[in-house]
Image (tube, rainbow, N blue to C red):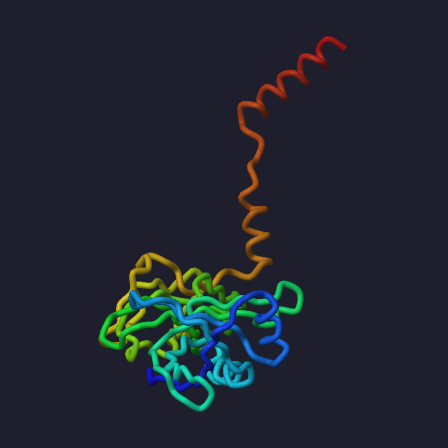
Amino acid sequence: MEETQLNVQIRTEVGTRKIKAIRREDAIPAIVYGQKKGPTPIRVDRRSYEKIKRQHKGQSVLFHLNVMDGEKKLRDYSAIVKEEQHEPVSFDLIHIDFNRISLKQEIEVQVLIELKGEAVGVKRDGGSLDQPLRELDVVCLPTSIPERIDVDVSALEIGDAIHVSDIVLPSGVKTKHDVEGIVATVVPPMKEEVEASEEEAPTEPEVTKEKKEKTEEKAEESS
């Protein structure tokens, strides 16, 4: 994965009023942490940031942050997004935490899992494709982060499943995820599940049935 250049402005003034002013200017307050260095408060142009996120929808982005003071470049960092904070009602992005990283040290990130193909159990037998795991935790060098992990599900029949252990990761990429974790599976049609449950409904035990018949016989004799 290549670094994506993003110019950000140093932020020397902090406080609630200043942060609100930054947001009114269509910018996002942010902080860069990590690499045993003090935090660097910055402001990010909203349009530039959201454009990059749209271009890499669902993917991890490796940023190269150019920290500017007006037109003057102060320093630069390789970084990834650690956390985004959104307004609860409008869901507007209101703050970003960046994690400063080294391109020579492995990091752990989440990568989107994308299913490819149409499962035979869905196309032929009317089953449904279920995807319990949508992102995979991977460990690798920042420049080796996969854009996504493609998983072919076309051979899956009803009852079949693809586990984490079945995924072939790119060279230099590994995962700490449980290898028995299910990535995708094909489940039976709902109608079949209902019919199966009805067929498995318990019948009246023979002992109970026999006692019931004897009780009825005694009642007839006494009448």
